[in-house]
Image (cartoon, rainbow, N blue to C red; front, side, top):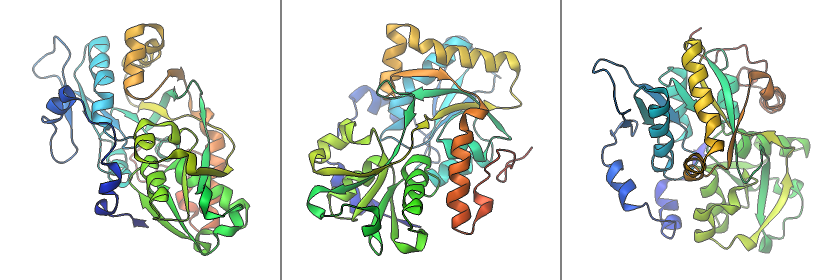
Length: 321
């Protein structure tokens, strides 16, 4: 896997939305290793261990975007909540595999790999939609009109090989078009937004991203999205989950689920969702991700790596029982 160096993309983000001053101030308290930001409920016991809320680095500035949600959860469940993220998908998965997170927001592939240790309780909505599709984008001026024309060319994907929508769903489309992994060169940006920015800057011939990514403010401020053309779009998949540890108490799990679902029901809650670029939250359960399992299985089995598929949700992916 070839990750685009930060220096190659540093100039691409110079025109993205600035971090508000209050958010910058709060980010100063992040620890260097996992950029953890402790957020405290109003009244807590000194010896109480915080619940760790892990948020994967799909969006730019994830800590700032999810701080309001972590603060809200702490108050609702009357328990300290500590917000953490990681510098990239690979580092975040290490946190999942080591069960560092009590509550976790990650992609659908992360979930099905960790389903023995974690239980999905809700899924997000974006742009008032409960589903998302993988999209292969090309530039209007590039002259590419079919997936088969990507043979021997470079495709930039957002995240990494564990990105469900940006990578796996789009690899599934390429596979259906007759292109296996070695038929094109894969490079990776840190997230789906940067994949589109990289495409616009000539890093690759095509980009694997998600259906809503061109609408993100950070993308629109960095590039002219009118130059992007949808080359292919996958079947819709249920949106990203929130999950909790399976050994969490029933009462605590129910409290967290109720708190997340209640975000839909007030103006304050909708502002918290908006901060994280969401428009809603709905209930989810394990079987809702069976379609994702089938797609994952087909892609990784074609690569000769069936162990990465974990399609039935019963494998642990290195996670303890």
